[in-house]
Image (cartoon, rainbow, N blue to C red; front, top):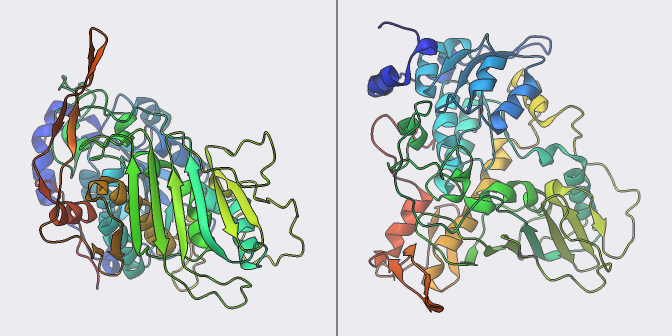
Length: 496
């Protein structure tokens, strides 16, 4: 072997990817799991996977006090400035190679790759006993969310999803007002975002030459291989189903968190979605999703009941109707979206990240008990704090996987509802078993593969290509639990 990976050319590396994958050994957490707890003054050795976008922001938040020992990205052109700004960190193309070489010297991993590879990078780190911070959405599928939830509990690592609003005062106040009965009982919630701000509703583009600075095989990762096109990366991957989760996955983790937490939700029992033109590969321009949650048991001391509740989501520029009494001229969009809790006594409104909660009546809640822990640092540094505490005495982060995992299932359930809308019925969901209960053995769906709308001499021509009829139960099961591409892309087993 002629060079270390930080000097490896892309051409050299591609030929060695398979060998690396085959040689990766994951040791049990009790063998190499850290390093145990650390004193607050001790520094964590942190690796970052996916450094060109939000990963760099997360990196900067922890770098002043911790050691950044390794950086990994599949696009060394996009990541070039981050590599240069962190000259002491070892550079990698492939996280598997990084784990193999540096597993024993890494305490924690920040994962900020495209959605479809969050779970595989994070789950393998957890089984090595590493603490993980994972960008939102936590995962690409329901099964992956459940897997990370259970693995985190098994290996007792500190975890955090990157929905930074969960560490903010807006979420704290929203939860406390709800628990204190300020608006009574909630049977309906409406929410929305102004996203997407990237192109969606697109036909599959033709292939292009892959830039020398990008390892396309590693970007594809566990997904099905497709020809490279500059439409996919480094940013617009969010709009493509194989890599992202559209506007819902991007923003619902910020906007719906106070809903999930404040109303003590877990698994929905019903789901229904609709959208502008739905394509096989690209998310639609606008969506509407309705999730129904069963009656829950209120926490001790809570002054609100928890009846069955419907949660409605809009995106692509759509907003819910303004309720009676809405202040004339007031924009419902606050920081990228908003939420309306419809209570039996009042309505509570908050913006994206739960920011700026207020009551439609104009009343300002007073003497509300402060039941929520306040974060006095940053979302990332609160995770660093948790990493240094022993599992027995650790204070969970504000988006610990015990909550973020089930919450993320809510988000990707919305994606499922949209992608199964051709069944033309409200879907019934068994959350414990992760399966739909009212999709028949012989139910089938067809989805548009290509929209070839044109105008000829002023006359609109509609010419759409469709898939052959697909078994709906098989299609749904694949979206709940993805079949990973062969070649070293495997997940750990689901803990019992």
